[in-house]
Amino acid sequence: MVTPAVGASLNPAINDPGYAWALAPVKDLVAHHGWPAGDTTNLGRITTRRELARGLVAIMSARGMSAPAGLARPSDIAPGDPDLAAISWVSSTRILGAPGVAFGPEAQVSARTAELSVVRILGLGTELAALSGLHTQNGTRVSVPSGFGQEVLAAELGLGHEYPVKYEYLATSPGAPMPVAELAGMIDTAISVPSWKLAASSQFSSIVLANMSANQRTVIQAAILEVGMPYVWGGTSPGVQNLWGAPTAGGFDCSGLVWWAYKLSNGSAALGLGNDLRGRTADQMAWENPSERIPVANLRPGDLVFFGDKGPKSPRGAISHTAISLGNGWIVQSTGSRAGVSVTHLGGYWDSGVAWGRRPAAMGQVSVVVAHHPTATPPAQMTRARWVALKHFIHTHYSSALWGRVWAKFTSHPAKAYAVLKAHRLV
Image 1 (tube, rainbow, N blue to C red):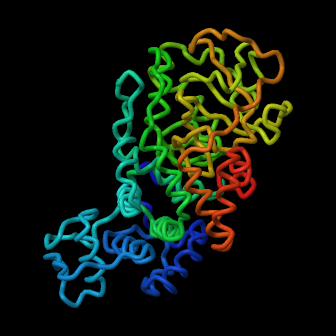
Image 2 (image 1 turned 90 degrees about the vertical axis):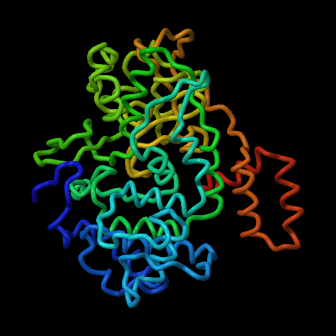
Image 3 (image 1 turned 45 degrees about the vertical axis):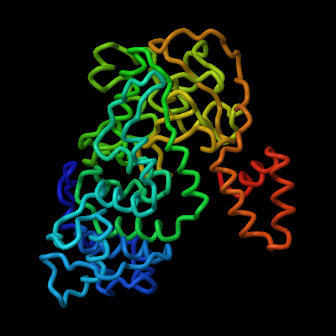
């Protein structure tokens, strides 16, 4: 099969077996959320605004919202159109169109448009604004790609799909037309997204990165501008690449993003910022140049951070993931669990797996050399978002008679509260 170029239409591969994963969410939408039964076929066809409207109404209805009275009919929707109610309701929100004007129901939809609509329906407007205005502590703006805010939030909420290696040719860039399979997965996930996860996303409303040197900014910008690109095993480029003997859409694996940011992007390559990075895998990068190793507590923008199943005690060969520090606890990474390149906070992301950091020579001198294993990750903090998650957890698992006593017990012992959230994989 010929892989489409980045941004190209996925047609005519509408019956590709790589879309079979979406049968379950589509059937759930048909059975419980009013989608037409015909949507269970041709899952690779391109999503239209009509289908996105159906999805947004399914989310609003599941969240207990009701359509307002007196909805205006869009000028290009016939009175007998089966989706009239859904399209009119969505138009009234001004998230996708405006009341009474032409809606364009058959126009194609990109993943970027669908994500923005879903994130707004979920009430994350403040977080979107903060991400769109990303800046450092001294107020310097950081350039972000189109759709950056919704890409980050969609990844954090798990709204995307990670294709296995044999189907990675189906992965597309954010601006490419979106297959119905991916829309169905996104809508079905958004309908059931837990309240604690939405609450945890509030951390993005106050995101501010650390101040950066010129070299740090060059590396950080190269990585940030790829947010939204899919996770592709072995990928090192935003353009179509030939991997394992077959053309594959642009994207990155975790160390491939580092390779791009430090060695392949124009600015970094011209300055030789990655000259001391020789190994291509996360494990190779983690173990070379021991003099550059640093404690996680000392991470600055541009530093690398490594992860393994045994954290700081991970042996050689066991480092399985790497990310780039943005300072102030934020990282940019490419990971299958978030379906590609995104930004998240280090605290709460695989806490037990955090191993150590590395400061490549171009990022500045390492003042303290860690001989073998670095210091452990600093104790996790109970942020406001985590207290909200704990409240939800207690409401769910304890009777009303016990709720107050359980809450009092945990609020007097934040470390125990965090341990409970961690044990149940809620952070």
